Amino acid sequence: MTLHQISRVLFWMTGTLIAFSVMAVSVRGLAGRLSIFEILTVRSSVALIILVSLAIVRPDLRRSFAPQQLRLHFIRSLVHFGGQYSWALSLTLLPLAVVFTLEFMLPVFVVILAVLFLGERMTVGRMIVIVFGFVGALVILRPGLATFQPASLLVLLAALFYAVFNVLTKKMTSNTTTFAIVFWMNLMQLPMGLAGSDPLFVQKLDLSNLPSVLGIGVAGLAAHYCLTNAFRWGDASLVTPLDFLRIPLIAVVGWWFFGETVDIWVFVGGLIILAGILWNLRAETRPKPPVV
View 1 (tube, helix red, strand yellow):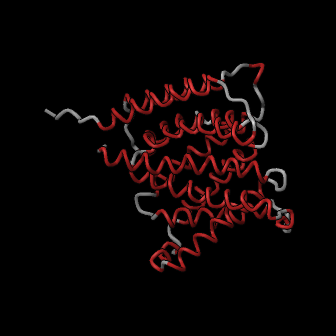
View 2: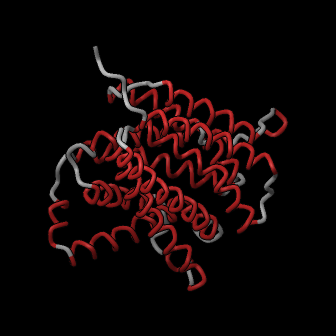
View 3: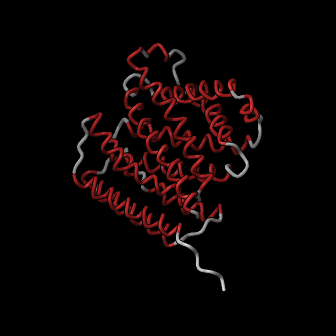
């Protein structure tokens, strides 16, 4: 990959990391008022309002409303909804740092699926970033039987769902616009959320919940827009390991907003994760030897 491609991947993944962190805080803000289904309904509703408004202003975006690859859109949306439900529920049961750390299995799943189904290469650099990410996550979490919580299994299930979702997203970027991908995802997920929601759930909200409502809608849309564009510039097995950086980031967010404990091991683990990512990025930009 070229340096330009790497820089674009880093740009879009930075937006993804920030957006997912904002979304996590917003889920916590609404958890006391709404069920998980209702929170996901809010996310899809706000995102659709934004997307339709953009299409009104920019007529060229309306082409994305054409029904194409609906079966793949539906499978992708259903898998993501399952992952989103598991992830959002885990955020109400576990510390933010624990949730994001347990997601270290996501890049492992993605690399395996990308090699098997997308034909991507398994390079030494990509193996190293997974190993470093795995070790860094363990340093942060320092797991043991005494601290195991059954809710942790929800995060692992979400990671598996997200891995399939990411591979499908990468596959669709070859012939589908980013706008179409996020539009059809939110359109299909809205009735999924409504199916498990109280029809009058909006009455549970007041003005104090507005920041969280806007946060989950805008950040949820921004996260998927940025992630989809990152996949346009790089292989799934390169893009997804960058998500390891969410672990130390969300640990600081949890400490800042919710008073969750942060110790030196969060930063030690974060440095290990960063070292693996930098190693892989250097390997990806290194000139390939000429074929003799």
